[in-house]
Image (tube, rainbow, N blue to C red; front, top):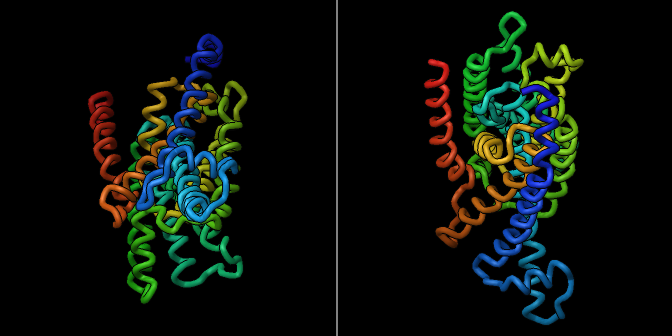
Length: 350
């Protein structure tokens, strides 16, 4: 499919797909209202809406509801939505860049690299001069180092075969997982904190974490979306993209930096939550097609819907105990990854 055919297809179905995006936003809004009603203290949807829009009349019970909604549940919902959106957009961009539906920040080891950087900051106090930004900064540095290490090791005669890239990503990810285990070994009294953090979850969500993650994630998502047409070019092959005027190697580095940025921001506030960047872009590509002008926003919204839903399930299914969100996404993502692997094997024989 060339750029002209993609543009024509985009124009023909623009209204229809615009309706899909608006519908997804509506679903996200309704979901946000409903999940804030759920918890040890049940709150009606009307009360939640009144509190969010500042139209309820003050009273003793209203003040309790207001604190629960605004100080407990709302930052958690926003943070889980941001992380879901970040991982989905990073996954969609990487799948286009490597032209493989199995590429994602988790599979390529970026999440493990970011987790090692965050563990360093927590255990050894490296970078603490930066205060609350030390963990995101080290997570970003090691996420970036990981993807460039994977990319360079997998490169063969100037090209990066997909199979080599995936295997290299798994190997480097395993290396950083081992280093994270070592950090746990020397963590001392901080061990339990790191163990729970690595499982991935939103039980420590607050407005400070939203303030840390939101600017980095939103910046990364907006910047990645600005390269939607370039991602469409990459889908047609590197040689074709080069002939159409795209500086492919420079563009690859830009996308890798942006993907590392949003992944590191996500990992630094909630730990490792895998497979979101694998599942959501693949499903949305089936629903809205390969045009990244639609695929990226659709993946962004559905990624937020998905992770808000999973987090709500994790915190309510066995109340008062919470399940780690990362465990649930792994239970969903591993079978999906195996399905993609078998499908690719049938098609390519590999």
